[in-house]
Length: 189
Length: 309
Image (cartoon, rainbow over all chains, first blue to last red; front, side, top):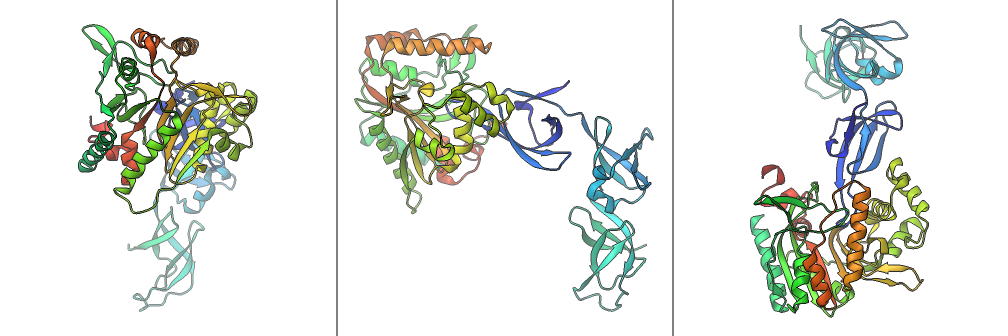
């Protein structure tokens, strides 16, 4: 099993901690003048999403997590699972509701997502930073009200609800930032 | 930054000139170095022989003191391997000085004079100063006496605050973890002197019995705005005791399957001839500059950051 020593720690490294895969967020070298050197590390538990802090003796090694980020195309969902495909091998992976989590409201068929695999199965799904989705439900548009800053809620084809400007209407396609859930602009055909 | 560095070095030299402490410039390359378990010397090869870049000028300065140099200071570079981070650079600037006939408390007052003078040359604000014993600092956070508590208590706390692997660590290592991660952030603002370090962390300081009957070391550390800045001792002058401590260090090194360090015979001879009673302290000049300039990384105050050397 691969291991990492503290001097290889850097943000983004995936390691096993107390049986769970974690991603290193920050790594700080600490050493009292005459004392033992250690590394204070902030990690995110990739299963629970919780951030925790640990201190390792410098030189100590920890087990690498068999975790891999991969670009995959979202195919469809069948009510129980969400299906993704590796674009090169066409291999399909099924992700559970827990793994898909918040990402589900942004998943549009054929969009490319980052799927984090742990021991070969999807652990989490990161949607593209920007997605273009159709409005399926909103109050009727107010033409001529393009200059004013007002907004209204709009339901998108994937189920997400975002705030959009008043002039937009059902059937319009909008660009949304999935990290903030904010409307970015209208996409013209 | 170059200007601030130059000004700081000039101010330090002026401070000691006024107090008639002699500047000395001992060698940086030598055939021996410290045995400290947690300090690694950088090896340099000279005509095929291994030499060590000095991790501090301590041994040479003590040899000078033993032949009657009187009060001396060093302001220059020191080298330590495997130390690199936001507060560490493998090559750094150290100020180290010795005062004959003083104890560590008198030396603390001089550190306070120096740091306060340097601070006030740049800042209007007050610099609060406090002196606390190690045991008091520790007990304030853990409700435990660090000198007398059981090792298992410290290991349990260290495992809770670090990771499971601390369960089998030594007393000194557990104390370092707990002090650095939990106690240091709770130290008062300003300039803080922590004295009477645990006997297991005496390094080259004398050990005495405290009022409660436990052995404590005559070692102090200085913190400025929460950052470790200096380390001082009432110096051990007993050659036999010093030899025992070097050999104990090497035994720990051997147990950890690390190379033993050759023991400095010249220092041993000087100690046997007689090191006069004295107190000494070493202060990190780059860190002092960091604090004076409000820099968050040592790279900001070095002429060239390590990545650019």
